[in-house]
Amino acid sequence: MEEKRSSMRMSLSAQLLIKNMTDGSAKEEEVEIEVLDVSKTGVGFICDRPLEIGAVYETNLKIWTDEVIHAFLKVVRIEQTKEERYVCGTIFIGLPEMNAKRIEVYDMLKRMEAGNLE
Image (tube, rainbow, N blue to C red; front, top):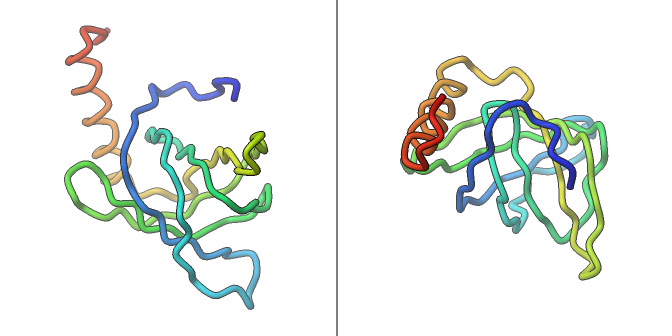
């Protein structure tokens, strides 16, 4: 997937609880995903079923501090893999500033660790 973010990406191991907010009849369900990266602007992950581009999903993202960030994600791109899985790129919708700062601080620490703080 081509890099389109201006923020540095970071990897997390996490589960997302997803609810399609654009489908009123959709029920909240836990979807098995593999989080590839997260930045203060969005989340990239792989899942076994396709999501809808443009759809907004409610999520609970467990971050590196074991805290849970409640957020809304809008799907902006999906690529199907040869293994019939889906690489999804999403952006945060209305992420509270406090949660964006948590991600930003972690980003800064990771860049310091890697010697890339500019």
